[in-house]
Length: 461
Image (tube, rainbow, N blue to C red; front, side, top):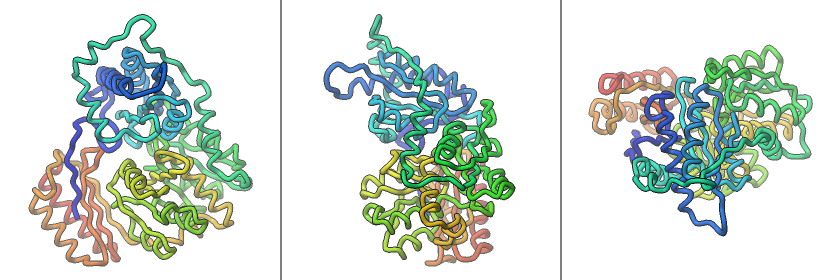
């Protein structure tokens, strides 16, 4: 099976715009223009009565955040829109603040799990959801529009910038409110690795205020160590700390804290699929899984489908990217979904993936059942998977690469109904990803290598 989507936007990918900081498109000049275009759009939206437009801007801990935050704020202010600055905060915190402060939009300056040299920007609408593809395309079309130049306000109509001094505290209160009031984390030792990123203050505070003893890792950002051998992409340090401190659970967040990877009490990684199975089955047992449906992506393990279906639920599949999971959730009426990579969306609480909220959902199951994380994880039988991520110099349609397609068809024929093959381009990086799933690890490793070799020959960087 191959997956390819025609690009309808030049700058925006599946999670905003990303690139090397201070090189196109992640330059101060581009951010200023993006701010002006966003301001133009929100000022066209209907509103009731006199209205001073406002946009919340948050960021992670990258050194380039200062440059890009200032430029984006300048563009918004130049169009008569006020700016509310939060400083470093998780992506879901900005979505939440946008709604709670009745702002017209929110913006997050972050490249999520990418290295510090990169940065990015993504926008939320006033309802806390990421902007639809069509609106992002409209922002792009406005970047060179003469209408922006003709609408420069002056005097008191120019926007102002304010700092929200208690932004972190607001998020801590919100996150804690997703955990049942009758429960506590007292008696639990939890390792939390914040990847030197946006949650370096708030995630430990949430857990400690609920009663846990917290072992903190990745909480000393210097602008350049975000995601560096830490956090959700590099959970080894978390796993080792769990064993060293005899902790009950390990939690690893990524740079903007919308992703969660877990380690059980033995230091063994529990990925997003297993956490979805645990939480999904808990919601099902309490009659709280809307439509008895969980939304996952095409990358999720087949074991997730089996676990949910055995309990009387069903799993729907979406394209990779939490925005597409969310789209499918809203279409189907589901309120829980996520990705194997650890983006977990609890729509009753949040409008986007939230690593801290997801951690509290898992901890709720642990505390209420009295079971360890390793015991809970046995609810799902994991099918072996082989995954590759290869750099490419271009992204032509996969069906235009005959040798690649022949290799994919050969793998699918060998697996039959006992496995599957997925080849797709990354929406955020110049990479192609290969996933082969089946009962025998050695067989699927060989099939994945074969497909990878053909991809390298055809379009390898």
